[in-house]
Each structure stands twice: as structure tokens, then as C-alpha cells.
Image 1: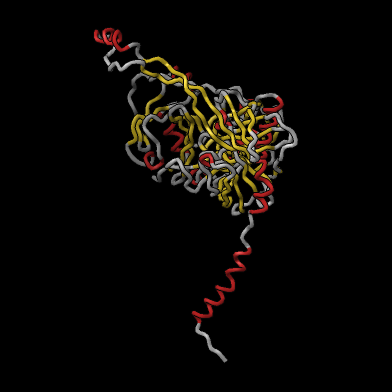
Image 2 (image 1 turned 180 degrees about the vertical axis):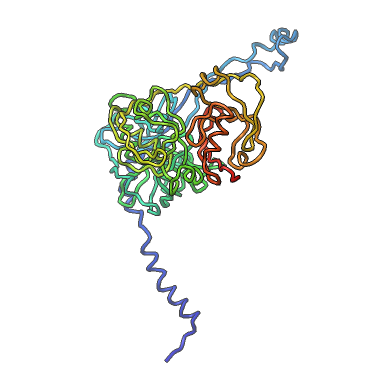
Length: 466
């Protein structure tokens, strides 16, 4: 009978388990072979102008007497010269008669768009429509019986699931990269209406507009952006959910424009401190910082300080989840919104309007000098009536002149903030703020609504114990 030492036994077990573990890794070969034919390379050219000097005249200050002299001998000064700037990206065919999905930024401002197929056929493409907010564009080429991709569902994706991308990074056609889903429902600062799929699939310039596949070979997203400090891939890439892309594409094909639902509230995240100040067990939902005038929210009776918990039956776990949900709601639809107001939950019915192209924001003028008053670690002064009118504050609003100590400093209040509410009660003067604070429970945080650089934001301020 042979006796083996424990290290040797472990090595033998590892050697036996390794082939078994390797067999559990996905095989991407069939997926690539079945789908790469429908992935296309897109190049676009944009005509721009650049100043070009026809001579070798040196620079002189404007109006210099030497300017005319040198122009005589060296010719005219700068004259704009046209030149072509090209961009490259990816896309995929989703109908056999030649409709192609890609990113808006791949073809934005293009004077000419060229599509190259995997069989080396080249087509001049027509831009059917493009939407900057979702970063989706629809192209059309004149061809029939083209290979297409099967569209899946991003809603069924799980974090940790394998995904694969096919595209043309740096112009290398039909390059394949793989990774996993690292998060879902990501909101980026410049794209509030897109709940991005975050992956660690290697995406580089030229991959934009290409498909993101699940292991069933279905398109679940369109690769759109990367997070990078170098311009190259650093482990974070973002894809547009395919359901949203298809909805946008259908509107672009049908009408040439995209309409989105609009509620008309400015929202912010519910932090742990704010949740405590509102008497909530945990931070959740979207906090209404401001109700915009003449909006569906104003007509329905929403108030600043409401916390939106559910929209049309869909949970709102954080503020970034609300804009995509509202944006996908049909214009004219009446939906129920579950809101926490004070210590109660209420349901508010609201009819959704179309998102306006721009929402103007008024800015006030400097108020007259007044004698500041100190309270809660800050110096305060009331706003002038014309400034309140310009900011749409009614009779409320006191300005923080200086933060001198806690609790204002600990709460993050800054000089220049305009305090509108404390504990849900309006603040029209420093005396109002003092009375509201004295009526609040000691040793607890209360929500304070401030306007900072024209933007409303809630801050949790802890009332000190006497």
C-alpha cells in the first residue's frame, strides 16, 4: 500500500479538477461564427474648415502698420480651407432589407456614411434618423436578403453573466472581446435617460455601435461608451439596453423624431442622513427637490420634499432609476406614482407630457446689502423680493453669507446657498429658520432645502441638543 503526503494529494486533486473547471468556461466559437456576418464597419466623413496661411507672414498685433506692408509681399492672411475628417465605428443589421443600428456619435454631423459588410461589399448609407440623448442612430443601405441578428432582452441579464462584443476597434474589423456584466441600470452624468449595462468587455474606439451578445447569441445591448482616463479601455464599458434602442429606432423610422415622457421634477439621491431626517428606515427612492412650473407634476400636486418610491408600479430604488422609467412612458398615459410625504405614503395619479427640448432656469440678481444674522453655525440674510421672483421662490429664501461652524459646516452647507425650507416648513427670513429649527426634535437630522447655483438640493442638518 502506497502512502502519499498531503501536498502531493492536493496537487493530484488540482490536476484532476482543472480540466473539469476548464470545460465549464463558455465556448464562444459557435456564437461568433453564427453572428459575425451581420456586424458591419461604419466610416463617416465630416467636412470642416481650418485656417490656412497662403504666405509666410509673421504675426502682428491687430492694426499694426507692418501688417499691410507684409501682406503686400507675402499674400493674404488666414483663409479658411475645407478638409475631410473621418470617424469609424461599428453597427449591425437588424432587418434583412438593410436597416442598421449604430451610435449617434458615430455618424453625428457626417456628410457621407460608408458601410462595409463582412463579405467586403461596400455601401453608401442613408441616415434615417439619429437621437443624441439615447446615442442611437438608424442607417439604411440598399440591399436585400442580408444576414441579421436576433434581438434578445437586457432585462433578463444577470450581473456576473458572460457577454461578448463584436466590432472594429481601431479599424480592426470583426474583433471579438468577451467579459461579464458588472452592473445594470447605470446612470452616467451626460445620459440620464439611459440605464446602461456596465461590463468589463474590452471596448475601444471603433467598437461604438457594435452589438453586445449574451451566450444564446442574442443582442442585449449596443456598445456605446467607456470610462477611461487615458482614452483606451480601463475595465469599464457601457452598453445601451436593446429594448431602449429598438424603441428609439422605431420612432426614428416612423416619425424621424423621438418623444419621451416628462414628469417635471428635479430630483436628487436619498442619502442615509436624508432618509433619517424624513423618518425612513433606509435610503430609497427619488427625492423631489423642485417641481417645475406648468409641468405634469405641478398639475398633479407634487411637492418639494416628496420621495418617489414607485412609478406606475415600478420600484424606484434610487434617483437615477426614475428618468429612464419616465422617459419610456407613453406621452398622454395616466400613471399612479407612490410617494412618501412626511410620515405617510400616498398615491398621486399623473398624466405624462412630452419632454420639452429645453427647460429655462431663471437666475436672480444680487440682493441689497443687509445686516446678516448668525444661527446654527452660519450667517444669514433675507433675499430681495425681485430675486425671489426671479428664482421662483415665492415668499421664501434666505442666503447663507458665511459658514462659521457646526452644524452647518458638518451638513455641507456653503456660503451662497439659499435656504428655502427647514423640516418641511418654508423659510422666509432668518427668524423663520430659527423658529423652525427650535420646533424640530433635538439631536435629530432635519431636511433642509437649499438652492445652490440655481439648482435645488436637500441637505440633512442635525439639530444640536441644548
